[in-house]
Length: 145
Ligand code: DQA
Image (tube, rainbow, N blue to C red; front, side, top):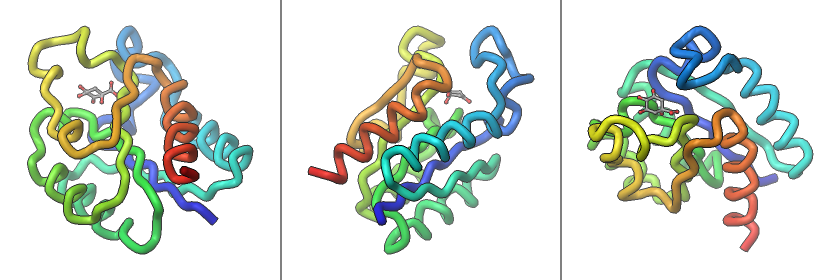
C-alpha cells in the first residue's frame, strides 16, 4: 500500500492556540484526524509526525527512505532557514510536497524565501488546514502516475 509521511515542524504543536488570526483554531490533533480520514478514502497509509527540532526532522526524512513513497512537509519556520532539511530531501530522493497553512507569499519578506521549494515537487499554501487533504490528493495523483 502507498505510504505517505506527513511531517510538521516547529511550533505546529501549538496550532489552535498559536496566533489564531493567522493559523486558525484547528489543532494539530484535528488535522491528524482529517488526514487519517482522507488517507482511508484514498486507500493510502500515512504516518503523521511533528517535531520542534531540526535534527529530528532531518532524521525523520532519512528514515522515510524505503518506508514511505512520498513526504508532505510543513517545515514551519525552518522552511526559510534550513539548508539541512533541503539537503535531507535531496538525499532521500522521495517526492516532497511543501505545505503551509498561511499564504507565505502574502506575509513578511523573509517568509517569501523557501529552501524547501528548491527541492519540492510543488507547494500548497494559504488554504489553512484544508491544505492537508489537498496535499494528500496531490501526492496520491503524483504517485499514481
Ligand atoms: C507556516 C508558515 C511559516 O512561515 C511559519 O514559520 C510557520 C507556519 C504555515 O504553515 O503557514 O511556523 O509553515
